[in-house]
Image (tube, rainbow, N blue to C red; front, side):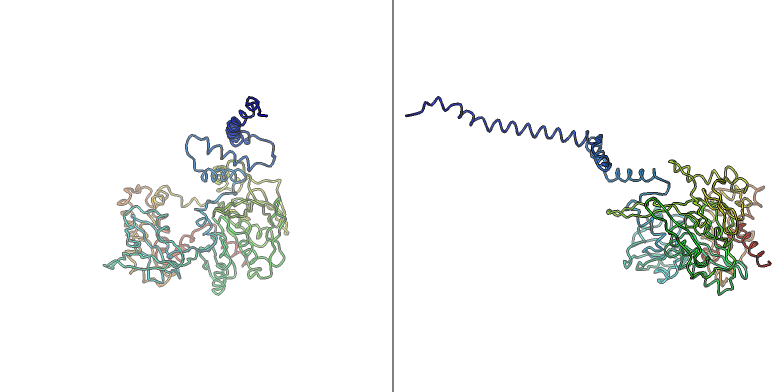
Length: 550
């Protein structure tokens, strides 16, 4: 029997419309999923409390939201770096972020070397001037001399183009083994000179100078605590010992610190085996104590350590270890007050963070970290506050936290909570303070004139056989002073009023001599001249001389 066709119609119709219905449902599902995904990604997830440990999700979601919704296109990488920087700065004044582009620049001073051609330079009159080739570096080996003017690099003009220090670094630094062509203009030589210099590892010294203050007192100045500091110290110490050094002045003024291990190594030289140097401790960093070993070579001789408001961190570790063990005399002014320890963590993109992980404590148990708040500007400007309320001029004006008193083994009272207090206070030197001398310094005229003078008179200055000979025999006479004042007027259109000229002359003379000496004999002439009337050094010599008479 044949079926009635009308009985098949409902099924047939369903079969016809089913694909259409499914398509509509699918489209609706896609649309609904899109809307919900937007709400989750850019709305609900930001305020969600479902994951109490979801801070990272919150940051990423916020960045996603900003990137999607912000009115202009953003640079997500820069926004992340700003966020990280602000986050670390909010913790304490010493936790910080180092962008990948700055990593080498920030770390070079502490690593002790960089790759380059090996010169110290100034930019004077829009020209790169060689102050001195670095000893043992490729420029010195090739015959580059103090006073040379670099006018071309790889055939391209670098003189008279308003070149900056950064541009000089970019052109002359480079990977070890690479070459650079440097064109030099040298005084009294008619033709320009070409030098093809192969870049090499150039040492960065952390020990500024060492010399004998008198027959038995040596002087060593350390500017930072770097990877090479201990080796530099030993070399200088051995040289001075051969010259008869029995007592030492260790100058840590203006030294901002550096590596903890370098400070421990230096302090170890002065302390007998077993004496505590420093200990560190933090929430996730168990107490770690550093003690003196048996290797010290200056454990029983008279010692003075110089500090000031610029001495921080590793400098304070050394000064604190010496003071707390009654090992020597601390002379100067209250140190900066940094008692926080940072660990550097390098990130995958070449950047790094320095995170405070512990505090350090001197042997008596004091933390000398000064107070800080969320305002880092106030923290770093505290030095000006010290000056304003008279601390740099008068010992009685120093604000001590009497609640943080500690006793050394010999019963001396020392204080925590804000730097190392010296045993002998020496106020900041205002005797040489002179408004017109300060103006001269501000223009850079002394440095520029000294370079020009040394370059012009280099042959005559060669008659001085050594830095010591120069210091003893070279004098700033009236003719040289007048030559300087003429230069000062010609270049800067400035003069010194007659009533103030005599005082300015006397204040100016040692600086002119020191800068001219530096351009001929480098630091070996500069520091002894500058230090000749230094009140802290004079007080150190006085203290050490008194101990000799006892």
